[in-house]
Image (cartoon, rainbow, N blue to C red; front, side):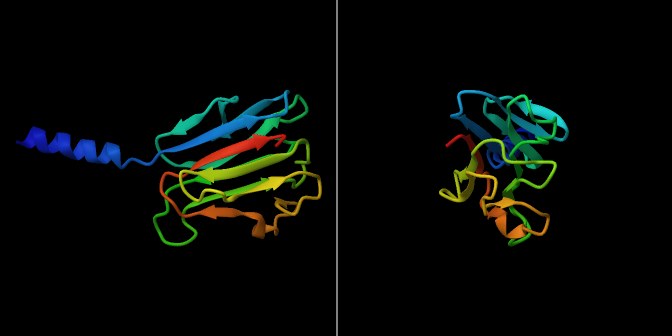
Length: 156
């Protein structure tokens, strides 16, 4: 009986485990989509799925001109986390052009599997949907849905 109960609890926990996927769509015909989490490159173009939150991640199209942390390029910043403490505790995304980052290619993102059709596009160096200075917090795009995923598109 005890073993059966443990198996049932483990199954329920596994089914309810937090999971997020980051998907890249590179339409540029050049460059390498790059996703860095915790200072480690975790994807160079393929889908990355995490069995837990993704916090403080960055993504950019490595064109050969970008630094390791996306310096010199258009960068997407993301935290994908299930909301647990009310509004503002879930996922958040933005595009940054705060120096040393600068516009390199058209870059956009959108949530899927929740908050669908919510995201941003940056198509030029003056795009209003990107951080240009640290006080541009209005460009952050939030999502308060469990297990939300992210699609990042270059040259859309």
